[in-house]
Length: 111
Length: 115
Image (cartoon, rainbow over all chains, first blue to last red; front, side):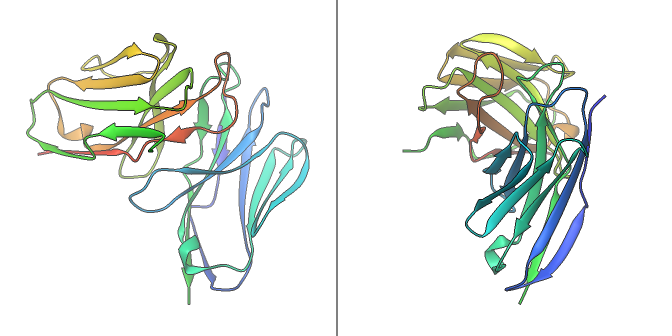
């Protein structure tokens, strides 16, 4: 089967750096997505990794290691508005028309 | 112009009623989805249509019936509403046909409360 694990909650301080981890088990791999979801809003796309390594996009970077079944989202220079849930997702191995979602990591950024 | 729009945004209704949620996307995408997000924030796929054809039908009570009159629209009708149906329902679209291609574009969500 497929499974995604993420920490449930994290807390960080404004201006700091935080790393949100995601581990996945899947029989076939077709990339990994990170989404951000603010309370009461829809998920919005952050990144998509299909090859190993770090991809940087402004204050947010995403890393993938396919051999370890591991990804992380790195948020730098944290701002209060980064308080949100961060969702990791991978395409279903048997049906890549759908995504398997993690439960999300709720990040609280404190002043 | 909102890329994926759903109506209504809020819906409060009594148990046993029938209600519908509508979704439209103006992105020209081939595939549309309905997701349910419960109070624990887990995103659960319910249905997907590709160019009006049902391609994903997860284990969902048959009180839920999707309808896609054309590839830009995907509606969700729910019969005999139950308390457990209370959740946020998200519509999403994706340009892929044979598989997910790039990101999912989500609508703003429809918060359903069943009393």
